[in-house]
Image 1 (cartoon, rainbow, N blue to C red):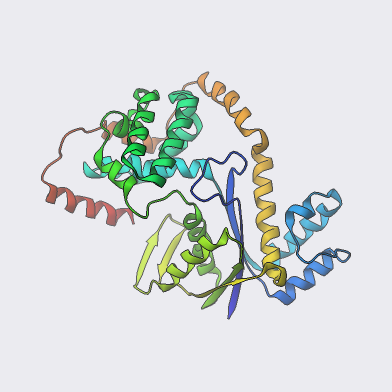
Image 2 (cartoon, rainbow, N blue to C red):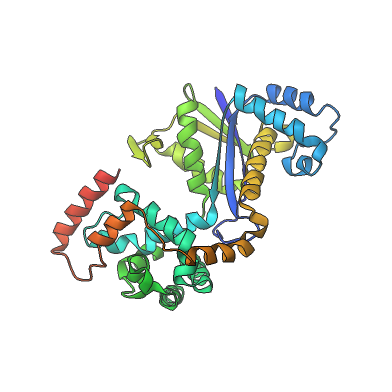
Length: 353
């Protein structure tokens, strides 16, 4: 049976604001241990270590040509997918999912139509510090993350207060539900058991959506026994165990159909799995590239100058978000009987999928 080996990098659990690890990602590669051993010996014949680690290899510039050549061969000759996400942007998307969308949902507006949620998330991510106040916006995201984790009345009150301390009147479509109304439907969504800010499921879904396309039939997954990957292991098993027929379309090019072709997930010691070691090389290189491309080592210092640059010119929202602003200027009242709203919401959800 075909086997994909996976490894991750940048996992920080529920904390998506960790300043030292801005990106999180994972790689899945369908390669045998025999082929992996051959490639490692071909590119690093003089290497005498028990385990190949990208971080250790990349510290020496003399290894860079070999690392590039190894990645070229893996991408050319083997099925491989790497997913990397900016955790701060993902947290903003989650904020909109739980602290904003339920408000519109209760009032008959499809918040996800035409990618409005992505448009608003992009605006908040790029211009939020300038529009809302940098320290206040940072405090808001931290309060949201904390409220999702603790789910206590005190943490929810702190979240509402944090929203009210921002310049929310400049962007009421995004922060009005919390700052103006302390919308109970949003607070209930945040307090729902099982809701969290752990990015592991997002990363896994992204990998699986591509593995399902690349696999020729039933396949299995092997991953390292590391503590970080325990969350991935449990989530993979839950997805495998789901045997009801269903299909979820996240976008025009990403979907997930159940039951999965994935049939088995196993933990292995990466020291005895050259294939898992190559997955470590692929995700390590991708994370390093993301950090280098964004100047992540100095990204907090750079953000203030970027905010200043944004404040010197008008901010233009996307057409999708502009439609939301025109159509939904924070409807405050009840839109009708609850049974009518529930039926309408079901139709909206069906169209969204």
